[in-house]
Image 1 (cartoon, rainbow, N blue to C red):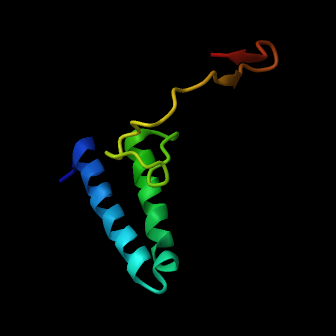
Image 2 (image 1 turned 90 degrees about the horizontal axis):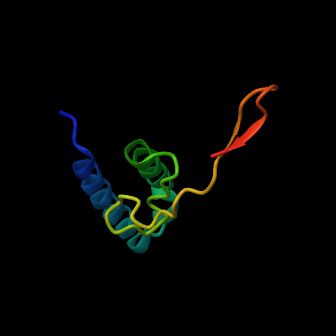
Length: 86
């Protein structure tokens, strides 16, 4: 059964709470949880898009609420069209 985005975000927040608990209360917590933090980041980009910074961003809902608005994007249109700013 697949979860909707809201359910996935809630699961990521619960997992982040576990990660932070181990980091605070275990002698090797930060080292032990490094892979889990990476997995959280991968899951967050799957749910929120490539610009998502969770769990490093501090968003309260793992929903990119604090993500800055996207700036101009530069794309290469090929040798004839050149660079374009969107």
